[in-house]
Amino acid sequence: MEDGGSSVARRSQQSFLIKRSLLSVEYALRRLSRTTPDARTLLRDGYLVVPNFLDATQLLRIQDALPPVESCEPSPEGTMTQTFYEADGIAELSPFFKSERIAQAMRGALGKRAECLRTAVQYRHHLGETGAFEQFFHIDTWLPRFKAFLYLSDVDEGGGPLRYVPGSNRGRWRLGLERDVYRLYPDLDGYIADPDAAFVGCVWPHQARKIARRLNTKPRSFTGPAGTLVLFDARGLHATTPLSKPRTILYSYWTKPGHHT
Ligand SMILES: O=C(O)CCC(=O)C(=O)O
Ligand SMILES: [Fe+2]
Image (cartoon, rainbow, N blue to C red; front, side, top):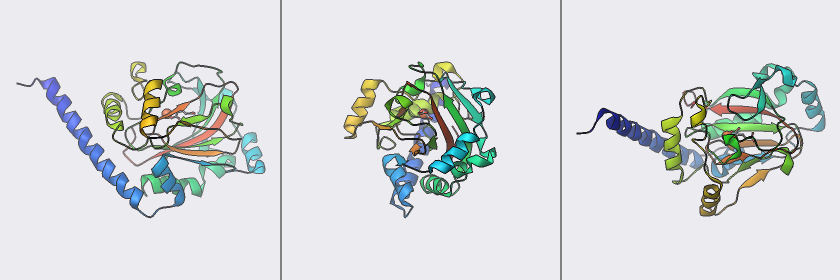
């Protein structure tokens, strides 16, 4: 006879597989549907880079309106970042936070009911390795979550580019990793509350290389000057790069209602 613990685990596994299958169908249909070119690229590759999203005048206005680092909160996840939340309350930042192009891309990728859950200014000042999970290739979630980054500093190789494995937002290889995240992700606010579970969505460097090879691709680094916009599906394998100089971004992140984990 099965003990209580293993039957709970089996039910949880079945419930994951059902939800995951429904999601696969939803996304297969969305990829086939008529949508905007931005959303189509996002759904296919998992990312979209828009060079010169803002011009020099718009950028200057944004840079002048940024809150000081002292008014930010340190990350609870060991990433050594400083974050100012609810940044959409700062009117001068509206070319990013109120961007119709970003909203349309997100709704095209996530569905019409997609909502923006977090708007923030993020400073990274810690140079070199942090030892945090995000410097390894990882997936954030198993449920769809898309992020928008606007670089406010020039991001060359030493400036902390986001790295991404193109197309890793899709495919059967994801199942095991997603199941681990589903089992261990401990809370519903999108943050990892238990430091022991912080690395749950990560893969080792040799595994990331193998997955990229299997997908017939290579990890990409999204370098670009201030004003570059990057949108990405946080289910795909991505990582941040250790800094040799500070990086500042605005970011927002989007999900469907009730899909925040
Ligand atoms: O800030 C970055 O470059 C990426 C960090 C990350 O993993 C994320 O925002 O999900
Ligand atoms: Fe991430």
